[in-house]
Amino acid sequence: MSAAGHSLALRGLSKRYGSFTAVADVSLDVGQGEFLTLLGPSGSGKTTILMCIAGFVAPSEGAILLDGQDITPLPPERRDFGMVFQGYALFPHMTVAENVAFPLRVRKMGTAEREAKVRAALDLVQLSAFGERLPRQLSGGQQQRVALARALVFEPALLLLDEPLSALDKKLRAELQDELKALHRRIGRTFVNVTHDQEEALSLSDRVAILNHGKLIQQGAPAELYEAPRTRFVADFLGKSNFLAGTVQEVFAGGFAIGAGATRVVTASAELPPLGSQALLSLRPEKMALLAEGETAENTVTGSIASWSYLGAGYALNVATPDFGTLRITLPSWNAPIAPREGLPVRLGWSATASVPVLDDEP
Amino acid sequence: MMSHQPGLFARGSAWVVALYLLLPISIILPVSMTDQRFLSLPREALSLQHYVTVFGSPEWLASIWQSFQIAVVSTAIAVVAGTLCAIGCWRLASRATNLVRALMLLPIIIPSIVYAVGLYRYFAGLDLLDRFMGVVLAHGVTGIPYVVITVSTALAAFDPRLEQAARGMGASLMQTLRWVILPRITPGILSGAIFAFIHSWDELVIVLFIASRDVFTLPRRIWDGINENLDPAMAAVAVLLVVFTTGLLLLDLALRRRRAE
Image (cartoon, rainbow over all chains, first blue to last red; front, side, top):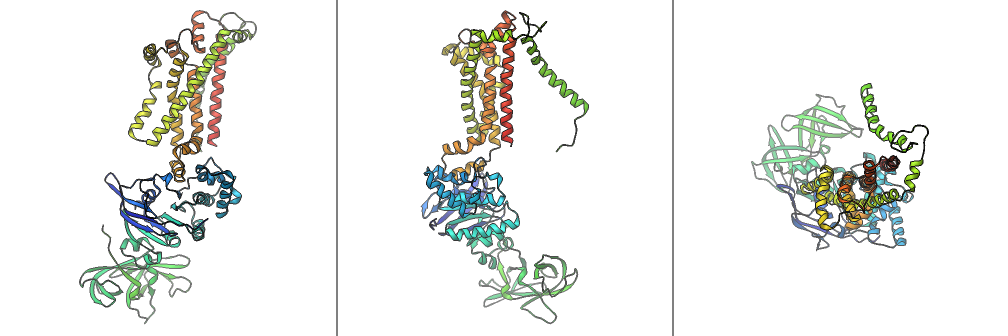
């Protein structure tokens, strides 16, 4: 298959159902050959955006551009996009090969060429031996791969994926994530994926767009979003985070300090808030350490273990502190400095660069 | 699985109802094999003479053939119109289409005698009385509800994402209909066709009103036979009718079972 990726742009896309706004003024660019994931909780509008791109839902406002051309008024059958549906939507009365051949059949392609392409597509997803089976005779993972082959066989301009892995169990999901990623690298097409699974979004995508209540909250590379979330929602939805609220007490070059009760905490920050304003810091659980006797850090907080759990690779401790409520901290379990026990007093430490200031989302 | 066993009363009343339904039908079997020359139970021996009479009678054979032709053509009308209506209502799915679907059921809700009187008035003006076409139209239209019901039921179980998938892959509406929707609802269409056929095959009331001499269907001939003379040949015809209809219903059952697999 050729590596002809196409670019897609959304310009001020909105969709309203009566007084309910499903998508509010979303603008987004997807570059050639890029893997973009729309991530959000249910009801965030991510699927509606995908359905607008596919052409099944007409936007109330805004435009969808493919390589700069406005395709907003085109019906789905004229857009030439491949799509993997939630639950796959394989035709149950057709064999695997007939399913994959379907998009070629509607294009009236000759039998010989069609068969060659179907074979190539089934090879691509390692299902060559299953052409004569019916979808219901396949496992969930195999059905998912048939859906992929069917969506790719006609060399679509764009591949749309609607929660492609949500119906699979966790282990299989991880395997297929790797396969999907490898497939994307191999064929170089533009992929737009929708999911509510943040791990899937982080591991698969070149870029992630986070949505909530129909609005685009933040977009960027996975690491960028994880390390520098702009709002409380992003920090909380993508991985886990503690939030430290306090009043800005001191501002200096490259950072500031907040105070809450008797505790003072410094953070690195590019933007500097005015003195006396309220600030909110996001602090990832894995970026804190348990301090040994006499050990120091830029920030320290004392507390006691309220509860804890063993996760195999690590421990998660919930530490009750006087000024910041309960803070969650994770430690690797193989060389944990303590044996966790409820009520055990501990001292937490972290550096100024471990935390980032975030905006509190509008309610 | 239900572990609950039906009690003696429930089981008993089920058998009573089944017998009540079956007995009147089963009585015609011995009657049709009577050795007498009038409608009665056999006295001394079983005889197939009345079956011979039926198959040797040009009148009976003509009526059977005519009923069959009418049933086939009217079934075709009912299937095409009913299927298209059901698919259209399903695709548009609004309050208006619910109303349309309800309207489509009118022919089985309204007493057929009322319907027949209405048809009689209209057909007189259209020169459709006592015409093959007139009966075909009447039976076709009154057969539509059966098809609408069975096809709508089949469509209710159809995953709308399959249609989206087909269109997303570039299929036009006609291609989607032919390759994706129709194959999935064929069992529903066949069921509807079988019911529409049976409806036309044993329909009497409308025929009594809108046909007289040229169109003389099988039920009509049985009816006249009862009114004029009590010829046991009627019982033989009735048995043939029952066998034929039962065969169609068994076919429907087999099709449903295949769909369920």
